[in-house]
Amino acid sequence: MTQFFETIKIGGRGDRKDAVLVGKGVPVVIQSMWKDKLTTADLDGEAGVALIDRIERLSRMGCGLLRFAVPDVEAAQILGRLTEMVSMPLVADIHFDYRIALRCLDFPIAKIRINPGNIGEKANVEKVLEKAGAKSVPIRIGVNAGSLSHDLRFRVESGEIDRIEALLQSAERELAVFEAFRFSHVLVSVKTSGIADTIRANRLLKQRTNVPLHVGVTEAGPLVAGTVRNAAALFTLLSEGIGDTVRTSLSDTVENEVIAAREIVNAVAESREQKPQGVTVTSCPRCGRASFDTHGFTRRWLTRLYTEHRSAAIAVMGCVVNGPGEARHADLGITGAGDKVILFRRGKIVKTVAVSDADAAFAEELRNL
Image (tube, rainbow, N blue to C red; front, side, top):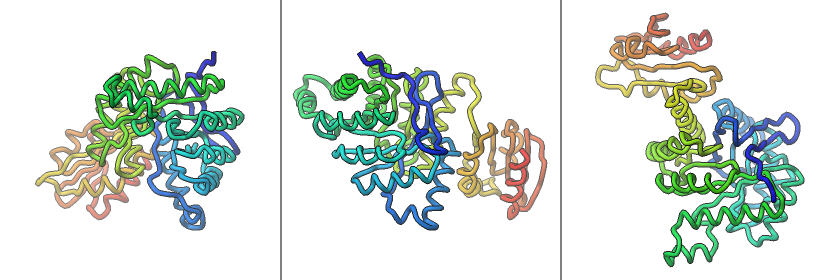
């Protein structure tokens, strides 16, 4: 009987490639998914430089894995080129055609995600397992309502079993194929778009298998609604020790997916009275007293702040009411004061400048932090 690995290594193939550990005994890994179709033009010239810079910035923000949709063999070859240009582990997301997965495995792609319900015959899955096993490339079994086999779908529609049980049985079937083939480098996800369903499905999945779990609310919605739905489900699961890698699926930017996931993971840590990792940003909502555009300042600085590796509390406040007093805890804060802006550390004012000089002054204080 095959013993599935409880902790697996993803990445590390080729020169200068990063690797991450996912599973038991290691921190939760944050991941995201690229929003656009890749073309060869995206990899060349200035566009290629910008693409690499953005991916490396995502890595500094705390994104451990980045997944790309691979709809055809040409896309596999483009992603394969990209894997040789960046250090972050890149993941291929494949549906319908097992030959795409085989082509991806010719490159240093870190992980394959397949939807076994639509990848075709068992023999096709085994061909992927054989090649992935030879290269020690992990595979995620991704199960959702769209991947249910005809018999499981019929049992749901007839009322014999509910949808969650059908999803779990689908995952167990695929794990049995992997087990029969002695393939141990596997993760599983059972995705739904509902909070209660996501919690229930993953609680039950955790009881039935020891493989690392990828968790998240799929198709969660736009930024605010999607973040709330993911937070409600993921906070509950992570607090119970369920979930080894997370993605906050949002109809928004990759950067905001990473930020949302970081905040959820840090919220779990804070609830356990553990120190959050990296920079935490607090900012006031702004009101009629505000003399400083906190919204605009935060938008300009948010991504950069999340690339800071050190742990620090940053406060962006609109007026002196919520400035050094209420934000006294901040390692670095900025707030409006009439026609000026003041910067403070731990409640002590360190600099007063014109509003036009706010960004430059803040940058200097951040460097000196």
